Image (cartoon, rainbow, N blue to C red; front, side, top):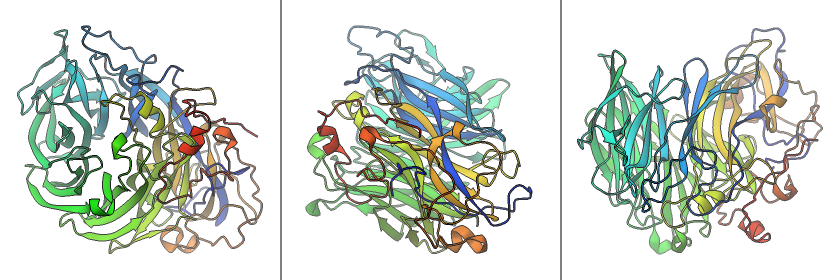
Length: 619
């Protein structure tokens, strides 16, 4: 069951919807075939990829905005970025800057790009690194990032504000705990950013940023995080208010919650008006020999309320826990994603050589006690992440585990994981795997082009669930049966000759109306999905109904796909992978487990070339 199937590219199906469709054009209990819509956000120019050049796009992140808009942010490599020359011969410019794009969801047309701009013009070794983005749902967003703004070879941690179009807000006044309240670059130019790190000459990175809420005085509160000196994972509180046209940013508190943390990468989820759960890898080594540490935090003071090693490493048994992501499921339950490694790649900074397996935990957000554990949950294991989203037609919240090929030789998929009221998980790898993208690369080109330092490199995807479809129940709407999307940002080369990753946004139909049953085709360009009611399927199809007969997904309107293997009425679109990989190839989204190479053997056949590409041929 590959993401690149022939003809219909049948990965999985999706079934029935949230709320009753009132438009006459959508028949009761009709079976419709849907596809994931893929939008090209940024096309990268070709160029040499080597240490320090970047890989095209890196570290994408997205945030929802009012009026059916999504803001994407990423690191963008030269030659597509305006990169200032180094200030001196000792500052080796890192060649990538920050960019944003505004994506507009339309009721009766596919999503479209409405605005793209560069938001940083910094020099130094790493001018704009690892951005994270959070919105208060109003007229601005907070971006956390690491940068060599003030020192050419040392990254500090900063925040900046963007307006609702993704442009930098310059009228800010800041107060940080380290006293660096006015930031001047190495050319003595004042910058509209606030230094929220230690400001101690040590490197910072691996940012995090989330919105908490608005207090009774109208002040917006955020929680952020960063890794300090490859040793300490910090969380910090931020408040933002407005006086006239001036935005006032105050760093309220900071807490070191995981030490040592050589590869900490803080991950945080907000669990209530005054609480959050923060996790990070703990250990002196890569991969971490201690495991994943989590803490429950009071977000008004930064006080640690509880702490635990939730996923311990076992070095004697060659088991190492790393790369956590955490999300809130509601009712005091958090989901924790972890990548388990055998540690065999540690002599090469943990990349490519180790066997990896994705893990999912449900934990009590306050006591941090484990409720349930599942193994091998992501369609691809390395750099997999988790989120939460509505799924199906019953308003149920599921865990989503997003996985992507780490070599560019395969695609990306989203595994939906059911969670009951006791936190017990159920993983249906046949019916609940959703197609995300026909091509994806989370490690290969970034490994070749990222200075982090030495020859390390990796990329991380981002996905947000439960994004409303403005065309829902509109007879002329775009996918009118679909109430919500899960939107993912995916790096991939555009075609067979491309040498750098471009950026794509995938719109996965994730929740839908009760009066339709849904089967999925594959992932296609958004332009290939017409407005208006989706095509009905008559008779059996090659694609199973998403959720099968699971009442938590389908409810009473759902039907079971009793005759798989039939012929679909819709021809769909074929997107074949690099070297014509299709449904018979080994790069299948359904292939889960402890797969260390993820396609490196195939790359070796062509001399480990950089042009790992997808030849997207329409038939």
